[in-house]
Length: 159
Image (cartoon, rainbow, N blue to C red; front, side, top):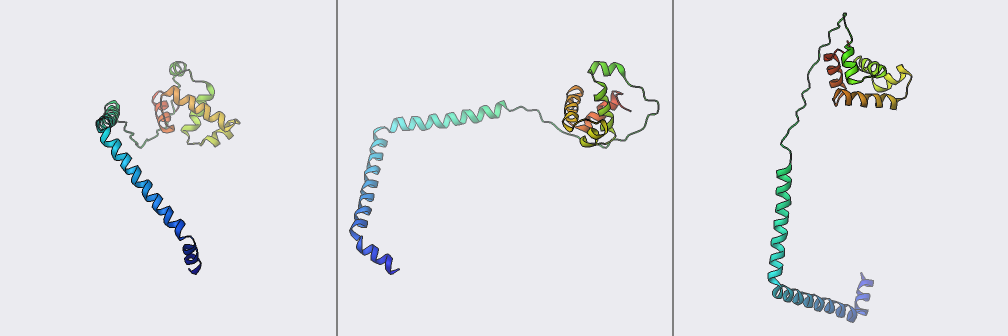
């Protein structure tokens, strides 16, 4: 504390001079700002109004252009019944352009296997399975594994 006091006493003139310069600079900038505001007040008001209306226009455009469609995902319990007399719908297979490998992966998917398990069973890489699944989802027009299985059963692609 004594060192701080000694430094202050030695540099008293410099500190007071710095504080007075800062105060004068603040006063000059304040006067300059007041002069600009009084001299150009109309332009400043017009600018503020333009900024407000621009913001309001952007907000309104975002509100009005937002789609009104609301997507509802319904999860439901699926009861699987084994159909011993399953017949593959070859017409639908050719219409959807499903390959043998995609049908194989779809069947393993329906059995509840993970991507890694499917890859091990078919002796292919994990990325290959993911690519086939992505193609299946596109062809069946679904987004989830459960939706793909349900749609494939409805179309008689898997038992």
